[in-house]
Image (cartoon, rainbow, N blue to C red; front, side, top):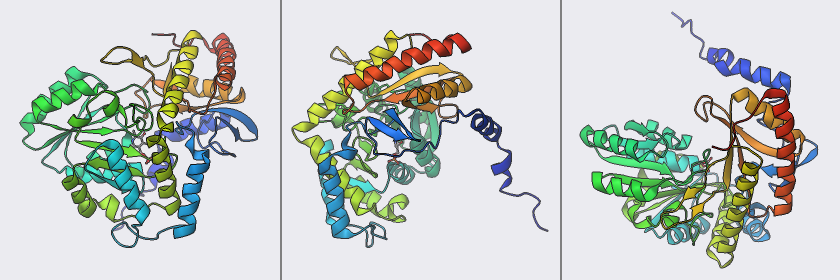
Amino acid sequence: MPTSVDVFEKARGHDRAVQLQAAREAGVLPYFRLLESPAAPVVEMEGASRIMLGSNNYLGLTGDPRVIAGAREALERYGTGLTGSRLLNGTTALHLELEQELAEWFGTEAAIVYTTGHQANLGCLGTLLGPGDTVVVDSGDHASIIDGCVLSRAKLRPFRHNRIDKLERMLERAAQDGGGVLVVVDGIFSMEGDVAPLPQIAELCGRYGARLMVDEAHACGVLGARGAGASELLGVEDRVDLRMATFSKSLASCGGVIAGPADVVEYLRIASRPFLFTASGVPAAVGAALAAVRICRSAEGPELFARVLDNARYLNRGLRDLGFRVVEETPLPGGGSITTPIVPITVGDDWRAVVLWRALYDAGVYTNVAIHPAVPPSGALLRTSVMATHDHAVLDRALTAFGRVKREFEAEHGPLPGPA
Ligand SMILES: Cc1ncc(COP(=O)(O)O)c(C=O)c1O
């Protein structure tokens, strides 16, 4: 007898359909807007010039002539695509040089390059963990971490974002589960913009015999004197077992990496399905990432890291002075504090967030909107982010627009959350 259930039904009747349609009709849909120029500090979008405060191009390297030359040389030498897996016909000298360069940068024995960062998390977690193991994750961890954990069928034990007491409770429980235990956290959290308390996390992992993996997607090329990420900044590189990073942010390209002990990396090379059963990254992407890593590792790297962090602090303080609720600066163990390039503004209600987004868009400022389920219910935010190539004059123009839009928005829709 044929089934009466159509698997396509969920594409028609899902909860989001009504909300999306309403947003489209009201002209406030913040997604899939058309970019018509390179990802620079000021971009062309849908026929107008807009200040880009929604890009992960933290060092501004997507337009750097050396990175473009790296991509072009790779394209001319190897063509547009490799049409095969790394295992078979998809490994070039560029992939190997990039792996070597990344391992040196992170100070690990080895590194393995995947076609995307999402696949790196899927490939690492889905292979190293199995049904008998337990994986402990921060509730703010990126979706690709959660996807990798689900793929592995390990027991998933989430703890409340950045709450060390909750992590310890999960580690106590995990110790009773009977398998291996891995803790996975983001170095910089992609929506919250705060930094994981890695010294305390590493200490707990040591105490409970758990391995520790840090996703440095937003932190590599930004934090630490070498730009090697949150693990470097917080002085715990020797206590972090695995580092993950993507090329789709500071490294101005597309791809991902897992860096760690040589035996683990070699195991991933032969057992990791998202590595084995997908085409290798296109030569231009690998060439661009290699050039970007070399810039980060050159004398120019620290200047770029300092510039993006200075811009982050400038925007964070400017928005706070205007009365917005923005992420708190993260205190550093040795004194001082750090603001990451991700500066989220808390709005709360989903609909108010998209209305505010539209007003800013019309005022010439592009931001990203995160609504549930990307953030907890009633936790909608505008996620702003800066690049090393923004200058204070451009950020001042954006802040002027924020100030005007806030006044007009509040006059019509009531107050926005103020500084915490
Ligand atoms: C924390 C984090 N991890 C992993 C990824 C996945 O990286 P990619 O975009 O290279 O697939 C992202 C990207 O959005 C991210 O923010």
